[in-house]
Length: 152
Image (cartoon, rainbow, N blue to C red; front, top):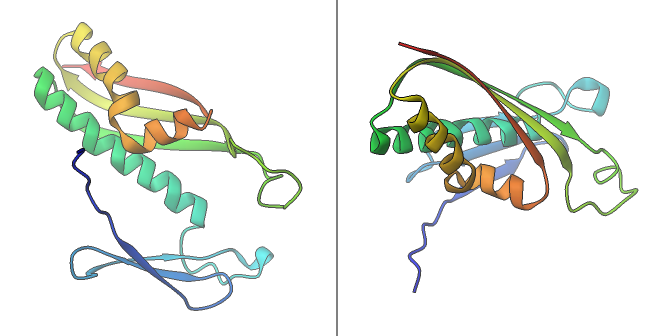
């Protein structure tokens, strides 16, 4: 039997576009998602798909550092940028899509210490060890990683 990890998030739809999200063992972490006025919202939080991409970045950061620790690499001053290229036909109700995000660009910038081969190994492992990256890749999303790291 495979061990399973439960992850719980709760949400309350406080309007037709705003969702107040709670997470953590006691619901102590809060995030607001909303739409801009042009789509009937009040622009009171991140777009739902921005929340999705933020989760992808956060997952990448955590798993990247786990792998780095295992391989003896250290990172500093790391920043991430995710740009998703979304096919809107799905949410518009015009087409059933298995791959809503056609392409995703992830830029990782900062400093690292370690061997180039170790960094290559980390990048290979990250694709399948990061649950968010693995989910996107298995849906057919083309993931383009851009690593702007300076070796120190």
